[in-house]
Length: 232
Image (cartoon, rainbow, N blue to C red; front, side):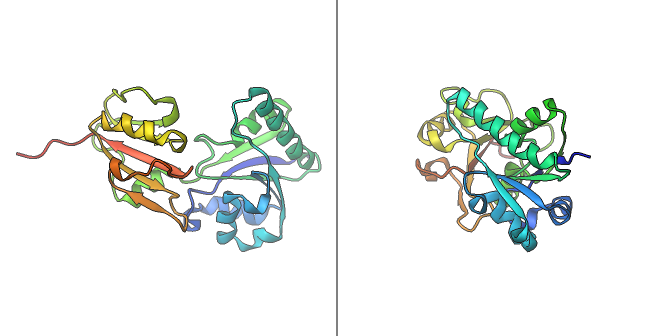
């Protein structure tokens, strides 16, 4: 019997936000993959090991998932990562791939999942708490109310647009173009909050677009909400 490859979300940073299912799978399995070049430096690993200390004694290997524009290089890296997982699956071992946030939202495992399934292997996605859900709770604000619409978008692909559709926006992947994203947000008239490194020791909260630094870190998430009319 070949093993199963699990894509397990470990949440955004706070180890207390791991689900019971994620904790159980970490405890029950022996082989783990994480995105990055050095396994024990992976943010996903550092989060999970706080919740499940015995993870430190299990087999762990990194899968390099480069964030570059070279499509051929990316495909080659994904294929190499899938082969690493398949070697363990062929031995009858399950492989648990630990990923930040949720396993269905901008998750690196989904690229490997497509290859594994095409090669005839079984996969299973295990949800974690998404970063934008955790960020809204940390900000102590609702994401949507009544009949509001929620848009979850990678901000870098919206630069230069107006965010004109009605509703509230979650802007992810903003850091590399933060100055442009801030200009875009100013034009919307929406209230803006941002959490940087949500749930991690160096977490920072910004309550206004002008307070957001242009050099904010990679794990920066913006929530832009329509302003509600004041009561008469």
